[in-house]
Figure (cartoon, rainbow, N blue to C red):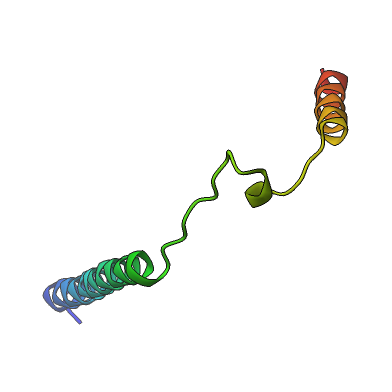
Length: 79
């Protein structure tokens, strides 16, 4: 093979690779857009009302105080 044929084969391989990547990314963009549309249409989840204690579960003051105290203690012990 002479250098002209090698350059031609290299360019063909480059164009084939770049074309494959371009087609894949284009398909990926369309599929992602379709999935986003479907999730917005069918998968809409309403956020829980933070003022409603039943929505987030019952957590009494003693448990909350214990959790906060443990978190502060763990944070201070790392320093």
